[in-house]
Amino acid sequence: MSVNYAEVIEYVKKMTSENGRPSNYPFRSRFEHTMRVYRWAIKLQSKLGGDLDVIVLAALLHDIGWDDERPHGEVGAELAVEYMDSIGIDPETIRRVGEIIMIHEDKDSDVDLSLECKIVMDADLLDEVGAISVLWDSMATACEDEASYKKAYYRIKNYYRNNKPKIRRCKTDAARAEYTKRMQLLDSFIFQLEKELF
Image 1 (cartoon, rainbow, N blue to C red):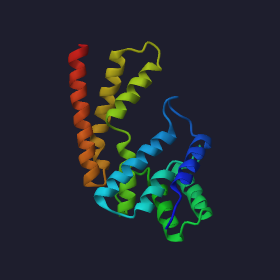
Image 2: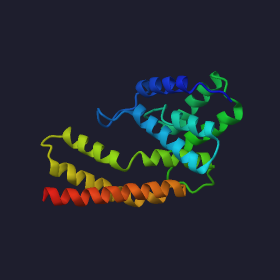
Image 3: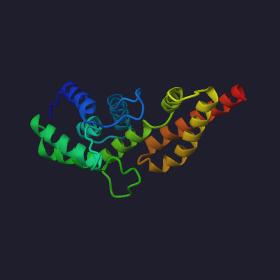
Image 4: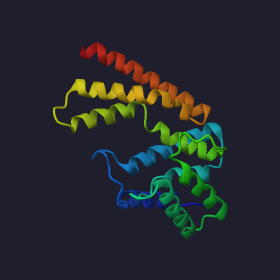
């Protein structure tokens, strides 16, 4: 299968900017999130195997849909299936990618998932934790009234506390190892920040 991924990326950029999904903060870009998920999916696939085209297409197209009334995975899957059909992707790949997009948000699912689905779900999950979450929390605090280092510290610490148990959502050992490293990084960062702030 020969896919022009540069064109797929341009389509994703267009759809994520036009789909009407509200952004929590001006600095949070759905397209940039998608590109990070895409890169993590490729890294995981290099360790775990699986059909690279299915993984890449699902990672790139996983967040293209939005509707206030319906699950965005469902809307995204419909749009992705229509788009993949229009660029000549084979029906079996379309089916597999559509299924992944449909359920990618259900991180607590214990149904029998394909390796490709596990990788895309894990890549999506990994984009929520780690050094990048410190940036998000710091920038989010800066957007609020009376921003301060201590407010950012408490936000970072709370986010860390809430996300540490979510390691259970990792579907693969490779993602679990990466998630563990990120939690250790945040633990060390918070410890150091406490010494410098208080």
